[in-house]
Length: 92
Image (cartoon, rainbow, N blue to C red):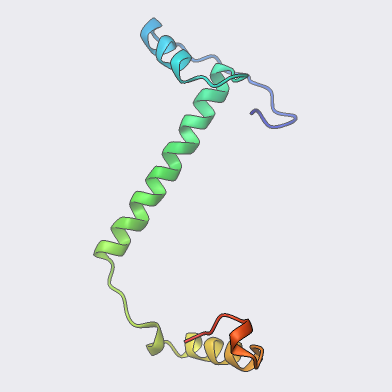
């Protein structure tokens, strides 16, 4: 899991219980550093999803149709779309 050219340079001290927890989380072929990297990546993904959900719930949104730039892009896509609508996804 470590990127090519990257070498581990740090040691992290953990309690025996934490080492056992990491050992339980290890997948075949992983080293402890790989487990930590994977857990950090997964946490960042969860944090991002939580952020997106919070914005969706609390955000102050306006209808896209009120944005002139969006309307122009949508109209351009409609103009360049194939004439046979049954063969493509329609844009509303």
